[in-house]
Amino acid sequence: GLAGPLRWLQSCLRRTAGDREEDGERGGGAAGVRGLLRGSPGSRGSGTSHPVPLVPLSEENEDAMENRRFQALLRRLGLRPPDSEQETFWRIPAALSPRQLRRAAASITHHGPDPSGSPQGLPEPPQYPQD
Image (cartoon, rainbow, N blue to C red; front, side, top):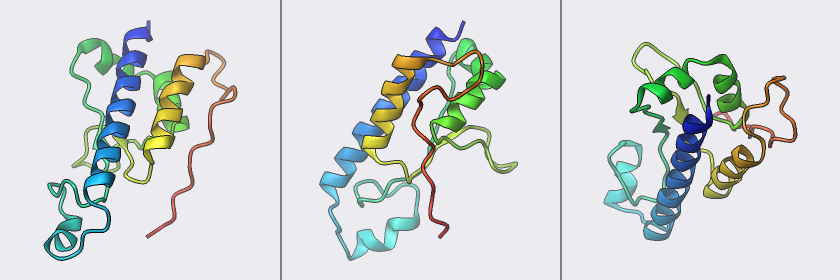
């Protein structure tokens, strides 16, 4: 079943929410050198989030990532599929706030993947402004 992968997905969302809260507290609008690093993936604590890859480390989670119902759930939660040959993993977009991530994690507990494939009260995926 998908119970294990759902727990894994929840913990990924919660961990990312916690990381982003810490980053936000550490780097409240710091300019200077940190500002220049904003675009580089390694700049932690600049107050800017980066997309976080969902890396399935178990076979069970790997199988779930290929399951169409699981992928539909990922999409409903606002997660993004790999968008090029260079990307292998789904990603938690940088635009999702800690609050949105926690809400998404909570919705998994309440609903799980719905066999009928209908969103069943899950939050609408956020609309991202195009940069």
